[in-house]
Amino acid sequence: MTDPRPRPRAFRLDGGGGAYEGQPAEVRPETAPIPDRTRPEPLDEGEREIEAAQKVGIARRWRPSLATLVWTGLSGLVSLGLALWIDNLVEGLWAKAQGLGWVGLFFVALLLAGVIGIASREFAALARQRRIAELHADLAAAHARDDRDLARAAVARLVALYVTRPETAAARAEVERAATEIIDGRDLVEIAERALVKPLDGRARAEVAAAAKRVSLVTALAPRAILDVIFVAAQVVRLTRRIAEIYGGRPGLLGFVKLARSIGAHLVITGGMAVGDSVLQGLVGHGIAAKISSRMGEGVLNGLLTARVGLSALAVCRPAPFHAVKPPGVNDVAPFLFGGAKD
Image (cartoon, rainbow, N blue to C red; front, top):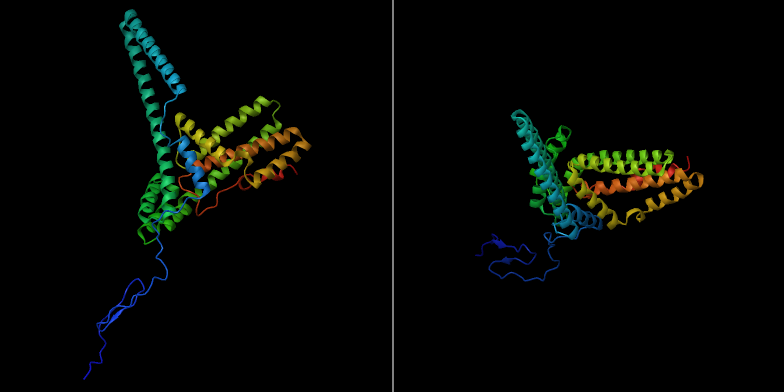
């Protein structure tokens, strides 16, 4: 009498046949390879441009040049001469009167404390910019590879970057809650970008639009060309610092120099003013405005240049890559420059 109950059966997880009642498993050819999600995907063109610009200005390894040697030697000699002059001054005060010597030492101590404080602030600003550049690269790599562990570590650093800002409390809580759930690395990066970085994008775009409007109006009304140059340079410096502060950079003097190099590299890599239909529209608008008034045409062109520099500063200072949010263009931040000629 045979046993009607079924025997244990083994299955292959890769889609092959199973073994039944002691029969060997049927070998079937593979129908479709299992996708390898650990293989890194190439970054898009925009991310390569931003990373190249950041490597030029912020994360680039220091390499001495002839100009660097000249300025280093000159600054060293000036510093030694200044120290020798202060020493002779204090000795002269001591020779005059002991009280004057103590006063001189007091002011020397104040000078040293100020110099140490300024140097510490500059080095802290440089380290902060380097961390933001590295965070941008790690978030881009985590999104490209869909790496959950790398994404969680990078998103945790992004949350820590804005931990001192009360207005980001709700967004930080949302991102931290999402990081504890079973979410792919790519999705976690996009959630963090929407929650934490997208509101800052709105503030940065508003700064770019306001600066472009001020430059276009003032340069259209300024009586001298030298005033145009001074005002545009001042507005570009102010706009760059404001965008860096919005995203958490807060550059000092040396940090601003490196940030300016990154922005310049980004403008060169992306083609500067000659990239995009919006810029071509702006040049057309500049031609129309120039027919009406040469000063109006200069105002439109200077406004376009300011907006373009602001967008490059936004792309370089942003701690997260553009994935869930579309990168803004000149037409998005300064549409009034394209319709202002008709008005």
